[in-house]
Length: 393
Figure (tube, rainbow, N blue to C red):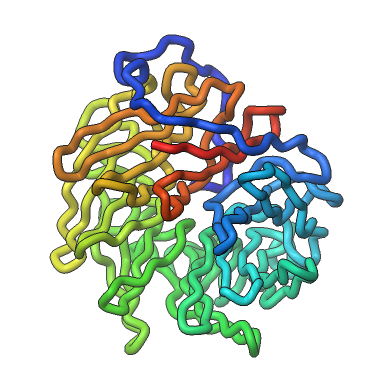
C-alpha cells in the first residue's frame, strides 16, 4: 500500500545482467527538492497542462511541513509552490492531481480536515485555483459511512468527481477501521454520495485511481482481501450503481497487492501487482485482464532485486505499442528502476536504473506527453527530499 514509503535500507550494490543491459534512453533530473518551503517527498502521478507545465504534490515540507501543491516548468526548471497545507484544510497529500481545463486542480489528502473520528483527521477533497493560489476544501471525511483516508486520485467525469477511500465505511468484516468506500462528489454543491461501502470479498483498502472504460463502466483496484486474499479488480456501473468484482488475485497464481492504476487499451486492461506471481521470486508481475471474462494473463514476472522489485504504480502506454512503468526498489543500486515492456512480444528492457544520486524510489505512475517523453517523481534521492525527472525513451 502507498501509505508507507518504501524502506531504503539494505540497498543492493551488485547489478544483475538485466540491470546492466539497460535500454538506451535519455534521463534528466528536472528538480531536486530541498525539503523546506518547496516541499519534500513528492508522490503520485504528475499532470501536465496545454502549455507543458507540470503539477504535483509533496507529502511533506511546505510552510507548515504538511505537504504542498507545486508547479514545474520543465524548460526553465522553475518550481513554484502553489499551496502549503496547514492541517484543517488537509495534510500530507499522496496522490496525483486532475485538471479541469479551467485553471483548477482537484485532489485529495489522506489526513487533515479536523474531523473527530480520526486522530489526525480523516482526509479531504480539495480544489485549487492555479492563478490565485486559493484552495477550497470541498469535503472533509468523517471516518464513518463516507469513508476515511482517500489516497487514490479522483476522476473528473461529466463535472463529477469519483474516488475511493482506503478505510472507513460500515461494510461488515472490517470492524476496526472500515474496509474503504467508492464515492461520488459534486464539486458545485459539495455533496458526497457513497456508492459502495466495501466488504472483504469486494477487496479492501483501494489506493489507486478509478478509470472509465469506453463502455462507460468505472474500473478500480482494491489492494487487499477479495476472494483469494490478494486484492481485486472491480467495476461499477454508474447507471444502476451496481458493483461487481471482475477478478480476485491469488498470490502464487497472478500476484498480490493490486494497488496500481489500471490502463485500458484496445479492450483489455493492463496493470501491475506489487508482489507475488507464479515464479519463486515473488517480486511482482505485469498482467493483462479481459474485463469481459475476468481472465488474467500474467505477462511478466519480475525476477528479483537486480531486475527491479515492487512495481507499485502500473504501466502507461508509450510509442510503438510499448508499456512503461517503474519499480520502487531493486536495480543495480537497489534504488528503483524504470522499464519498458512489449505486451505482444513480452520483451522487457530496463530504461533507467536509479543510482541514488538521481533519485531513490519512484513514487507514482509515469506521465507520458504527446511526444512520448515520460515524467515522474522519486520520494528520495537528489538533495535527499526527492526529485522530478524526465525520460526520453
